[in-house]
Image (cartoon, rainbow, N blue to C red):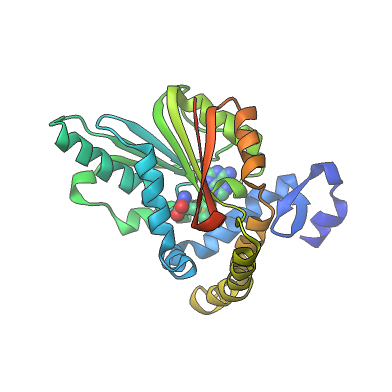
Length: 264
Ligand code: SAM
């Protein structure tokens, strides 16, 4: 990686944790991180967030308000948490309205190991055959334009090399009026809370990575990459730039994460 750093011109570099790497190298480096963490990903998520990521994801899906017959694309979907929740909530809505229509979901991820971990975890019988697991890059989605009702991306966008391209492509695949929801780690809203969060993430998370996943480096990357991601208002500006309408955000857990939403 050091060689890559030496040769790269500043305009060709992108952040990878606290380092700047050649933009052509980032996707491979990110893939390596998730190749190594896929097996223990769900367990580590629960440990590092003390289970709070489940509440965040539930709030994302409550806002998404899934309906029977709808189709979700979950980009950087990893092991499929959001897709399962989308189908569960859509089925509940269908029961209330006695609708026979079934929702479906596509989980797209650049990393096959993450998708395999999700497939291995399985789905409830009622969801069998309704989730498609697709390998692909958020920057050039292998989908037709205007083919999904809802696009989600949860703690994935900061790993993408060309964010503008990914946002534009996620908007492209949404039907007119379709909704976009992005959950990402963000900036704590108070200094005291930020200090506590820094202490937890710089000390505890890499330690957990080392002892539970036997991989300190990947979890160090995770913590660093969060610090290099734009703050709430800057990222909302990127969404507007990509053409999303009625962009807004909601802080979760005092700004540790934020849910950004917009309409196609
Ligand atoms: N969305 C899942 C969740 O919330 O549990 C997984 C989040 S995990 C922190 C980030 C995911 O982004 C990984 O599965 C990784 O493979 C995926 N990823 C990174 N870069 C990507 C890209 N350019 N296109 C698609 N997926 C990508």
